[in-house]
Image (cartoon, rainbow, N blue to C red):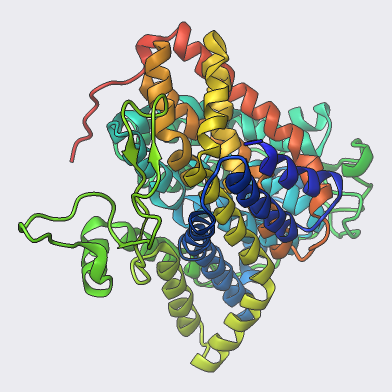
Length: 570
């Protein structure tokens, strides 16, 4: 019964081809019904927990996605996006290399800065601008947006995991950084192989190695020796610079293009045009490859300026001192002092009426009955989405838009993303109902029955959490504490299993209704969600299984590599 909301959600999406926001609504209503009828949750608590999740989803996730897409729309409105597109096309006309640059490297950068679906939206729209069909752009970006997700939005999932599991963040961060670099090296190869056959994949294997290894090494180094905030941003920047420099000295022997690409002019002397791939992704014969329009360095820098401003704003919003100052100034309930003069314990925010501390978790999920806090921190100014929105407004003003034009662009963005925002809100409402009703605990306890194979299936518990909620952060909230307690009961290192929850969760990102909705909204193919889900589903399960095998090896073969007591240099 606890799995029924997931069965309804994914069954409607994949089997009956229902639009994701209706699937999310049906899944949420099923979760509420199961919670009330079978788990005996009082109706008021079920309704309030759903509303709490919706409110969290709007401010913490949907607002980020909306603001990030707003910045992209401003770039399009001012004509800068065309220059960005041409700057990528000038590096290489080969579609295989473009998908590495945009979907993997640039998408990872947006994930590190904003997260929560923004990379799928922005990089997907970018690829359409380069000439990819909407279906290809959406599917490839969903697959690419995996390895970076554990450090999205300035390390938010790792921060949340440490708080939920009550374990040292530095150790958890380092352990995730010893699992995901392996998949970071695999995903670029997987991405290109998804587009083309084996032969065409190995034709660009040197470039795949440069992207994958540079990203993986930086991800490992930064997570193990620096901090959890800039892992994705630094890895993306390093890998992007590495591949751009590499392509100045190396070119593929054949330029691969889609069969639907228009005939182009002026073939380069250093490469032939491929016509060897087959099937849906096959290439076609060309007379040549068009030369990208030349722009000055100043024009290119100006075009990329909005995303540089986005990075600066998000970094500033992530600084604890700035965030704390904004919260104290704008969120009165952020810090409450009790009558005895001590700060109120627990998470900040207003107590959610009737729900706060009304639900207790009990053994074996926790050692002793523990009340579940329900506090809503309406941190509208310090929210990451507000930082993204300010970046968009500043960029628009610097690019010559007036306030009226900015409002018109924002209204168009809001109309285009309204369905995605509804889906996000209902997905988080579903997740919070499962959390406060105990459905998540029942699902988690079912995985503990796997015994010796728990490291593998515990990894898929994180996958399930992300597929259910659409967020690695939310999955860590749902299952972080349970992973710690279960692993201790089974004699497995809790640092490893809590890290596995986040690392396994990233592979569920491509199949959650929230991400698919954002992808279809951004690439203007609403109604095609079921086809995209069916296309990426097996990729999600296969990559999740690879992470599970890596975790199994750490649990039983390389246990000495699990970190303990790490301290970062301040």
